[in-house]
Image (tube, rainbow, N blue to C red; front, side, top):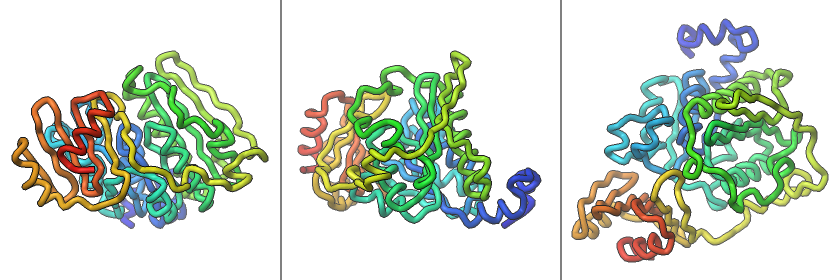
Length: 340
């Protein structure tokens, strides 16, 4: 550990030399490398956490640049994978940290593999389905996790510790993943609220990782930067009726169909995930698809330009269909060019 790099942080008494050493030994996973995730990853990597796994299924587009602070116009022009681009930028910022980029969609199949070997899980996602997966893994494996959400000008955050605080199901019930929530597609989002929510998430994470447990807020915090509102409520204890943390029923991790289409936040893009797992040979797929339009590919993804419609295909068979709004059309295009 290069102490000169972290000297100002070490001077902060609650952290000190001992806390900095604990940080250097800590492992975190950040789920989602969008607006929240880029701030989370930047602050934790620069703080000197020992290992950071960056997980994201998406690619960089121009509309991301307004609030996703790790990316630039070249990344957007090339349609780079967010996790890969973020890892590259952060390795330049701090070579002390081991950074792993994971270009995958978090599902019941891979959630435990990707999230159960870290000290803290941080939520940088934009949907409750993934948050319930995180919550189930966290409770099952007794791993603290940081919840954060930001949309429009408001945001919410909480730091959950299995066995010490309620879990996400205790607070919000078991059906929040069924839709009906504001998204950046419907109400927009401004960058300041993202930075504030992510900074609160990192602060609680630093408290935990450096052993300052008495400083943890144990509260659910809500803020609206436009309306100048900031309030928090005590989370209390776990509910005896909770199916997750009390009865240990991890329904989000149960086997389920993977043949899903999902509308992506903020643009005309549909994700198609095949119902059975397979590995796509991108080099062979490039040759096959080049007859239809311009193809660019690397070891992680392939992009096919069909004019008004573009297809981004990942090595796990997942695809983003850009330029459409109908899920049925996305499935049809996937079947035509990739094969179901």
